[in-house]
Length: 466
Ligand SMILES: [Zn+2]
Image (cartoon, rainbow, N blue to C red; front, side, top):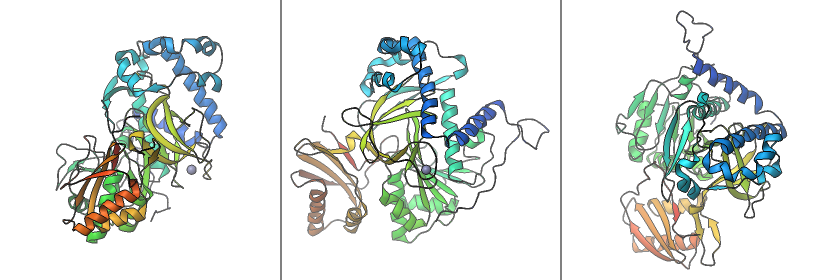
């Protein structure tokens, strides 16, 4: 269970020879700490004040984009005059067109600023592939990375992590991080950039088997583990079956996929530790972090505007699910303004913790993860505890459903032992019960269902076009 007591205070490393106390950080670390100090303070502002400050920053972003980004020159021209002379009103903002994934692919170099202020630093390129479709190239300035790091640190502070502890990272495929030893680094990375000393980092390739991963965790005895939810689910289930504990673990951090309530539950049952989720996208940075006191999420409004819109393009009210439109506030090298990148979430009411940051109750993932019914309706396919236990009971260790058409599902499973005729019939029954009984089911058996190149795993994917 979570430990509510305060962790030891972080230890700072001085960048100046002969000065040990108080430590004097390097200039880059000082910038990071100054941003963090503001994040710590401003999260308690009333929601309306956070929105006001956000609009000031958005206005600066829009003016920059209109002047220096070819793609936006015409697109933002209708509101340019009003923007230059006045504030960014919600009405004006509503006139800003949405940006689709295909727009980014089509615009290519035209989305890059021709006049990036020098203080934003060097620009690097990264690719995102998502679950389907062509890769998209996005660019991040050093300034964007600075804010990304500040939110990483905020996450550690919110959840009262002990920087002196060790961190195990089991994410994508990492070269030289195979079983049994993985790869070791001296520190966690980001806190070091702020001049904070940390314990070591242990890395292991996510494609190692659950048995190898749990063995690695027992031997390395990390204080924290960061991994993908679907991987965590397998590790926790393996630990329960094999009756293995990882007593050193205080908390598990999850990232990169949708975290189901069932995975939280099975982790607490297996290891007795809580899970803190974060919601990020490689092209956008952090969108939201789990509240330190609740299981829902707070939008990181100081670095990104997150709009949740219904089918008619209106903002969703608490309790409603809509698509997410995101605008990173400080990325000037390749501004992504009102980016409709395909994710969905449920809006929540203000949080009892008192933070003014907006609440997302659930993150639902991509449109491609919605099942299309024969009548054209779509629905989410996230399963709760009972149904998943039924699958495990049949001997299914992994499953993946791919919707090929409105009438056909391809179902891949990995099993712990060959299924009897009766068990296979029960499996087919399970699929019909949870996806619909009109689908033709093509069932195939696999030793292991692989992850994507980014280490992600989707238990459902649709190839049905909109
Ligand atoms: Zn909260």
